[in-house]
Image 1 (cartoon, rainbow, N blue to C red):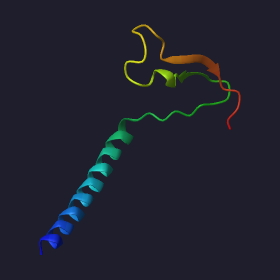
Image 2 (cartoon, helix red, strand yellow; image 1 turned 120 degrees about the vertical axis):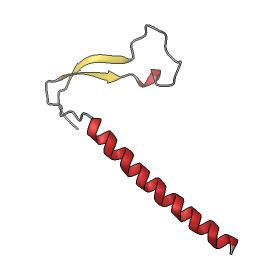
Image 3 (cartoon, rainbow, N blue to C red; image 1 turned 180 degrees about the vertical axis):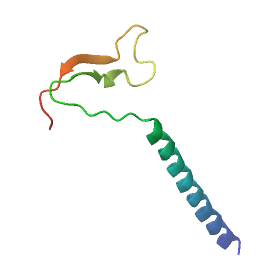
Image 4 (cartoon, rainbow, N blue to C red; image 1 turned 30 degrees about the vertical axis):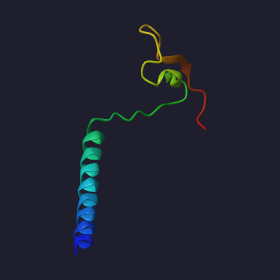
Length: 73
């Protein structure tokens, strides 16, 4: 009997998590700005070496570039 209740609770929690994730996605998609890049655009590239927190100095650049887009893979 106790195991049956435990399984029901797990399913309920899984459903709540799924609903919450969907709500968060909707809110994110409202604010997100998706950009369409074209050949010839000038862009900056995120420098992944600085991604871990604290791995860069205060005035280090976190971006590489600028680069021109020549073609898409």
